[in-house]
Length: 156
Image 1: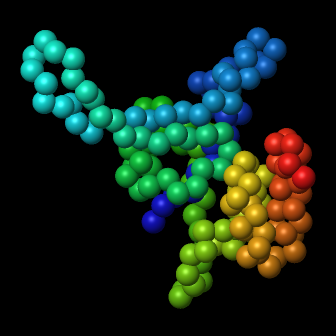
Image 2 (image 1 turned 120 degrees about the horizontal axis):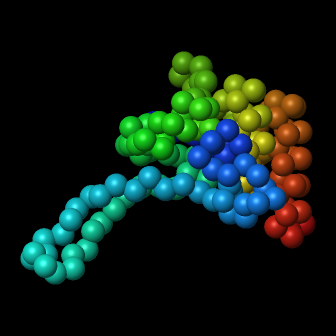
């Protein structure tokens, strides 16, 4: 089952924390954990194509991280350090037996859903969650975050 991760660069000691000295990209850029899939079949001495795979981990909520990618991130030196420091954490769905996954905030406990909403920049996911959510606290948080993102993006 795909993982949901929250990446909080504030806990990442590998990134600059001084916003006066460092550009915003230094602490807000995504991290990639690439891995080689194939080296190609080129002859020795020639340039060969190297195929890589690996997703990006963006600051905030990261939805649908595959189990393979998460396993690789957990074994990667940078990834394991981020997990150990609490900069990167997995948020697991809490579904009752027989309940199907909706891929919205309904799949998570109230506390985890609030964390996902606060850290999400995915307007489509937030709007989909708002349509399916029934808990008043989460509906308020969703509405507030949607308004914030629309304001930043210049939408009404």
